[in-house]
Length: 277
Image (cartoon, rainbow, N blue to C red; front, side, top):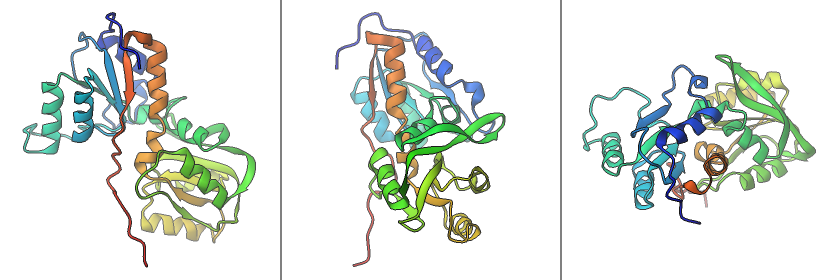
């Protein structure tokens, strides 16, 4: 990778690029997006992208000499009363400030964007002719579309597994492997509150994550064994598929004035599975 030029953009210029692609005012009302740490006037020569602003990710960005860390998930979604290093969030804020690393968050505004998380997941899975799965707060959340050719659920599950970044625990599937899949709904991240919309969309399969026992079981009961079948691709994997797109956007908009890298840290909290012998 080439070194960034001396004509480094100010953080404010980088933020303007991100805001055009993922406007902060398109985020859900409960969300907390935008600039978390940093000075809009500071120069940005290296940008690091990751799904989660964990301590390991921040250390990785710091070791890489990053001036800006862009993450999907917020660091401070809920109110905090201390940033002492005795808590993980406090240590994260301290490490960002001491390392002179700005943090910018694009969360639900990136989910709903025209080239955001849900579109990246859908296209990675071979789903086209996309339309919104549901409209929430006047924004299109999730996508639904068609496969180029029908395939079995088993085949499609393997397509999904190959399309998203590899996570330690893989993916989970609910439905008969030989069921035919033509129409697919997707929602990166937690999606078991949209089963009604998925049924209304006529999807044969639903690719999402964080499927809890009771909502998933009830969804399968409602379908009487038929579609929509469920594919839980994992929260980290289903959304991390967007990071290379965001990185490419920054490269195209800012050119060789910046160096842009995607984190190699897997922030999926699960590290291994144990199968019955």
